[in-house]
Structure formats: structure tokens, C-alpha cells
Image 1: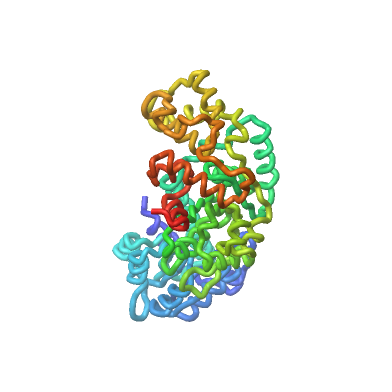
Image 2: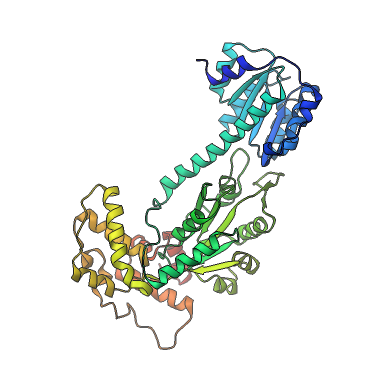
Length: 469
């Protein structure tokens, strides 16, 4: 059996294309978000390809040489490039090799009037996805066009899946519980999932905002498309714009989320300048990659989350008011674990069942007395803190609450630190809670950040604001 590249070469028809075929417009072939680059030094062939593909893609541009193509590649992001091998100056295979060396993921179809086995092998090794021999019919071009865009889509989905495996907990820990509080939350998510409105998830750290966002995605009509979670606090301040919007030679997370859901966790951590760019993306449903003149249309559902009250952040000048109101189309608040302690037995059983096989350890038994103790504790770290407790207990082989968390030795009804009567300011309460958790772990910021469900960088910034070491 010949390899795929040679298969295209062997089956390429040698009859010329009629103008009627080139002008045919099949709506089923329309890819409104796709960008295509055609590079051929023959004006007739270049114009034929442009005319054939223009009705079927959002952007189709042409170039007569590799050097002209490089200018366009610097300005625009392309999903597919159709390159003639024989070009004046730099040839198509050389350009393809340079694109791959730069990390450009653009799918490439090579075309030529003169080809042999050695050329086909070189094209394959350089990273071409298809190979067409001139002259070819419109059907051949459209087939390569369709298959190239499908390969690009599959690459994006594969990248998203790999990123989920490396950067987030597998979504097996869903919204577990039978309490009235959790049933109400599940009903709200079910209603909102049916529409594409932007959703803002609020609630304390560890309440399961990412799980709620994933539930929204899975219950939506776009459940089969990518779900791309982004922890805004964990991303480098110098690289976050390129990571989100893309840059020359690489796609951003907005593009990887096309057709699905982009989840912006800890959205309050975004710099003000980037907040303005996010607002424009939300309003126009288009983005412009860093250093590019091209705007890319978006078909993405936005879900944002914050463990800090955004209204207070707006009043403090740290968050844009217009972005806050744009995100707050639908707001859903996730309850703290203290508000539905009756779900703790179900959560414990769920975490034991899902984590034990993942860790490769035997399940642990939780006695009735231990369960009552767990239900007495106030869980400042919410469901995440409970999950971490069960995971550590599975590793050591028994539930040993006091040994795992020193703060659990305090009675649940006693606040970690006295709160003056009448104090309701959220920032003051947040500060006291963070200081209490730091005190409970003897100043260990890494451990405190884990308990609080925030990044160490966020915790250090808070301490700096309070002029603490």
C-alpha cells in the first residue's frame, strides 16, 4: 500500500479544471473561522485556487513567492497553507521546513507539476499533510482543503486533552451531594447550560468552580467540543497575553477553545491592560493575536470564576467595571462546604472510590465517630480541603485528622481567630481568615496556599499588601 502522500499523487487527475467547477459554491463546505494561504508563482493557478476556496473559508490570501508568503505569515494566523514546491527563490519545501522549525502548526498541502518518489518522501519528512500533482480537479483541491482543516481541528483537540492531563485534576470529582443546596446548584447549571450566555461563577476557594464550569460545558450543546481551563493566577504575567490570544507562529488558548468553552479561573488576577483586551473579545467575538493585523472570529462560550468578590475589586480599582458587568450576564454562587455538611459522607465515599484506584492503594474505612468529627469541622478550604485530606489519608493508610491538619485540633465552633462584633467587611474577613490559616501551619506559605485553594504567588501578593514578610 502506498503511503498517504503518494496515494494523493497517484490518484491526482490530469484533466484541466473548468471555470464552472472552480466557481461552484457548496454551503456544506463553508468553514467561517478558517484562514487559508495559497502560494503559487503562476497567476492562473493561484487565482483558480483563490476563487475555489474563497467562498468556503473565512479568509483566503495569495502570494507569488515564499518571501511574500513570509510577510503574510507574520501578519496572520493560517489554519492551512497550499504551497507550490517550485517557486522563485526559496522553494515550498524549504518554507515548510522553516515553518516547522518555528513551531508554526499550520497544516500544509504541497502542490507541484513535477514530482518523484524522492520529492514525496522529502515532503512527508518536512511535515506536509498532503501532496497534489498538477493539473488537478476542483474535487481534489476541496478534498485536501477539508482534510487539512480536519487535521488542524484534531490537533487542537489533542493539545487540549494533553493539557488537561498535565495541568488539572481529572474531572471525576463532579458535583457530588444530595442536599437541597447541591440540588439547587445542579438545577441552576442545567438551566444555564442550554444557552451560550457568559457565566460568572463566584464562591470561596475550593468550592468546585472548575467542576461547575465543566458541568456547564458537558450539559451544553457543545459538549463534544474542547473545554479549555485557564488558571489566570498561575500564568506568567509576561506571557499570558500571548498564551491567551496567540502570537506569530503559535495559536492561543482562545483558538484551541473554538466551538467549545473557555474557562477563565481566578479572572480577577488578570492585569488591567489585558482586562481591556478580554472585554473587546467578549463584545466583538473576535481576537487579534499579539503582533498580528488579522482578527480571528470566535465561536467560544466564556465562563469566568473568581474567589474574590469582583464588585469589591472594582471599587478598589483593581478590576474594570465594564468587564465585570460583561461577565456578570449570569452569576452563580457556589456554596461553601459548611453550608451543606450533610453531603460530607457522600463526598468522602466518592473521593475514596475515585482516588484509591488512581493512587494504586487500598481504600480506607471511616468510622462513624470520625465521620461525625468531619461533619463538625467548618472546612475553611471547602471541598478541596476535604479531598486533600482523603488523598493524604489514602497514602498513609488511615484517616488521621489531627496529624494531617493542626488546625483541625481546634473545636469547629471556635473561630481560628476572634472576630470583632459587627465586622462584615469582606476584605477584613478575608485577611483574618488567611492569617488564621497561616498561623495554623506555622507560617508555611506553600501549605497555607494549598489549604486556601489559591496559588502561592497570590498568597505572597496578599502578604505584601499587608506588609508581611
